[in-house]
Amino acid sequence: MKTPDSEKKPDFTDTHSLKIKGHLYSSVKAVERKILESPPTWVMLAMKARNVAVGFIGLKTENDSEFLKKEYVSENLLKISGCDQHLDFYCELLIENFADHQIIHLKTDVFINNTLGKLYFSVVQHFHPLVVKSLLRSLS
Image (cartoon, rainbow, N blue to C red; front, side, top):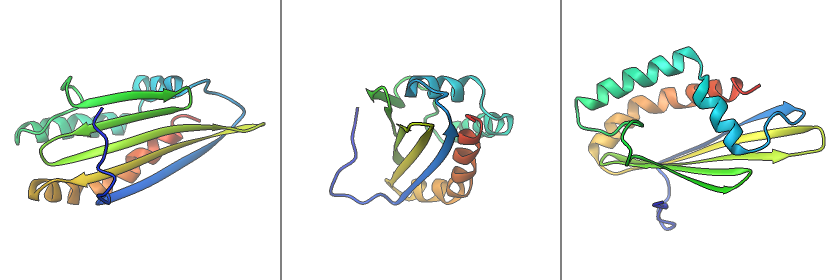
């Protein structure tokens, strides 16, 4: 999996977290499965619209087998990357286990590659936090 250049600072970074009482998820694979099997309806529709729109300008979608790369670092850490002509992104999904609860973190770093990336992300950056927060809420 391609990794970010450690010398370069991300153009955008954010981390969102969710505290869950008890231990609902045994691993990041269980969290991933829940997100993929039952995302909020509005998120699913937004992603379908995004895929249609970017298809017209030649950008990759999550349906492109070479776009998303996953690395299960441990039971509690999943790294996901997507690299395309306009930007590269790197996500980390982390579960922290405590005695009576879990905290699930989703961190995203975005590296913009060119003017198309700037234009694309100038729109996406407004929706990204809403999508991530909605996905995390769907886990509880």
